[in-house]
Length: 282
Image (cartoon, rainbow, N blue to C red):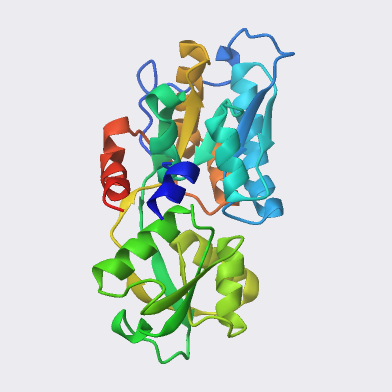
């Protein structure tokens, strides 16, 4: 298990602007070559159309302040996205924490901003399910997103901490996304799903259902925006301040509302040391 995690993943704001409380807007855009596009990569935690609805406008907004085109991209699978990230194909990226620690520093990426909430996995089931806690999961089937997803790693870790051995006491199955994981519960193919709260909110609204949470894992720093170190320092500062400033303007708040996101906050590499510890102990 550890070998595979290392291969794949090991691998809303107070604005601290450059000048007082001012924000970096179009008038202060970098005088960069507009013919050189940047790529904003987003890990495939939601269906493609939903990702594009939320993050394509964010890419366009970053392009305005940079004075160049910024294009949204994602991948069909977590694994393919991680490969592209490791290869440095994204100039800016929105990624999960286990991928971050694999590409931080020498891997080519530095943190820009993270979500105000902490990230934990939650185990959900149908509202009328007899499952009520971790103990009731013994001999049950639990669906998960791809194996490299942060919530999959957190859920597996939580099962082990509660004396439930995957493959022995609990049957795990991995699926293409959080949505497909929860769909398996609805149709009765699995008894519960390990996922994340934002994905559950999205799924419940879309499917007009209510899911019951029976457990929550330990929490770690959330998903985050990162920037490749090949970007000029001035551009990195512009990107960071723009993301941090989305909660301070009407246009920025509209961007966040598309994904039911709260404003983003500053983050440092050391905040993710807890993630490194989890990987070390797998």
